[in-house]
Length: 511
Ligand code: BG6
Image 1: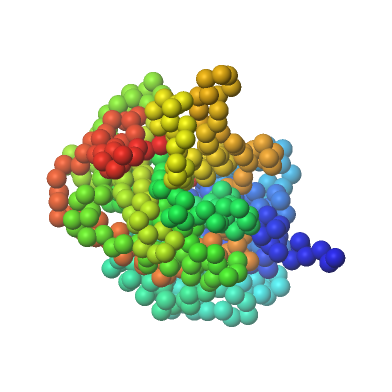
Image 2: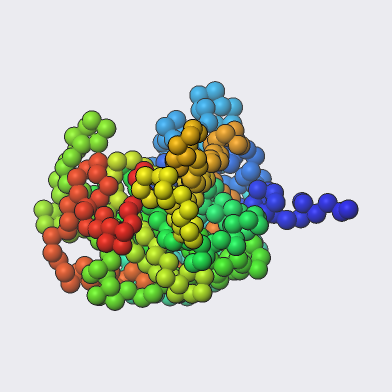
């Protein structure tokens, strides 16, 4: 029989390995933290794995006066700190750094974009003359507008003797209105298939594995619905605080920072219908349908089912830490939330009346992201007389990080004459099964953008639907400037979040 296993990318660990065409990556705002911490280390990793194309260059575009040599030195220092590769004796380091060119300029000036264009053309003409360009907006969002418009005016947005694409970092908008405006500005200059809105969660191996787990296996799909699932809990917990980003966070809050993007992505991948193919539009069409099916949140509903919180001084891992209001740059009367919990329903045949509980918070006891699926009880409890209390529910947990894996909790007989029943775990761990830790999400996403695969990027309608869902919460909070419930650092959030589940005879998973 003909072996077709190579034809199906899903059977090959998601996707065929493809090499991008020669291209230039232009990073706007290259002196910022993202470039040093994430972009350059990821590019260096791709370089070490020979996954970058031939004739690849990086143009680091920023306002600060710097020479290319100085910038390369900064990046070398950054690599020492953030790269997974040994830097000191790495023979490829100098060669990699030689791909980087620093370009100084003010993003608001059209002249700097004109200069950039000339610089690019010179670089490209020295090689094969192909004009494949990937712009990366790593600046504060307030600058997106002028950069995009200037790229348009300088004719740096058109496909001309090659392709042109743009990666835009989150937050993409800060409510529905601003997201619509930004989509309009971007859409006037670029076509949708040139635009790559990045959400680094989609680059995580474990997040992509949600689809493989669901759609490459035959045994889970039949139980992935309201008949078998009682409820779902999605947690994105962090033990860090605002980490010197106080001013940014004060303007943002966790609803915009984590829920609008990372959490709704997890929810859509978990709940979507099987796409007809594994391609950008088929997958994103199904994800958008989930967002469209979530019941809209009325004021009364928000009052009863959405909880916010702010961390107050406390201690974590034997270290006393100050509360959010004492962080640098935070006003005393701030009502910005560092924790949010909510209940959502998806009104479709698969999920009607199944509650989805979401919680995200900073300065919680540990860093953990997971989706826990609680199954319904067996229809008849025949072991009632031999167990103490209720038999615990079966729980399937998709562990996104840090202990990447999947585990199934089910009930088992305790050995011995008593016939007691106790939950046990069946575990799959990435580390043990594959013997390596997953690569950084940015590696995958940068490579996909160079290849032209936007499956793991957010489409405009997806982004708008997410804002449409959550904007009523932002408005509700703006109109109810009451004190935000406090929770102690190192606790699992405010009491109100526990009440949200307790009143329905459920409880948050203990992590
Ligand atoms: C970012 C948020 O998008 O995600 C940060 O802006 C947050 O506030 C981070 O800390 C979490 O990412 P990860 O990959 O560590 O879960």
